[in-house]
Structure formats: C-alpha cells, structure tokens
Length: 131
Image (cartoon, rainbow, N blue to C red):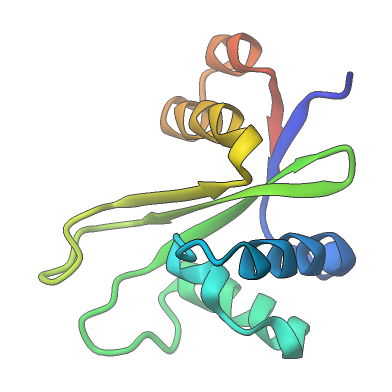
C-alpha cells in the first residue's frame, strides 16, 4: 500500500480535488477548513489564491497568512489541512483539517507530521513526505 503524502495544492491534481470537493459537498457535512468551501469552478485561480494566502498577498483586513496542504493517497485527495501562520483577533484556532470519514486518522497523523517535520514522526504515521 502506498503511503499518504502531504502536498501543496497543485493544478495537476484538479480531477482528484474536484472529486473530493463534490463528494464532500454531496455529503451535506460542514465544509471545514474554510478553504474547502471555496468554489473551485475557476480552479487555477483558486490555486493562485491559496499560494497568495501563504505569502500574505491580497489578504482581507484581519486575516493572517495561512498554508494549505492536501493529503493525497493513491492519486486521490483524502483530506485538507489549513494552518494559520499566526492567530488573529477573531480566529482563535491556528490549525484546521478535514478528511473523508474513513480517513480522519490519517489526517490527524498528517497534522502530527506538519507540526514536527520530524522523520521519525513521518515513519510512525504512514505519511511518506511533505511536498
């Protein structure tokens, strides 16, 4: 079985992301983190917005830079992690994640990997890399 991989959003995985997005939307579950609620109709623009948000470009007043990662497994997006680089006055949480119901354990492991960036943590979680 191939290990899961955390990676930055990439237009090359549009089909995989769209499948994740439509499956989540059809489930009726709340779309958390907020980045998965973004309308992906203009996919390349959405990717650029995520890149800009990480660099702090074009942020709304009161927003702080944030990084988004997709949790990929077998060429499928199975989860999304969003990390704020700092806390803001109205957003008390720094890290949000979502995953398909059966993949929540893997997404929690991804958070552990991002938090530590430690090779030992990666090997203990089944996450092979962060790209």
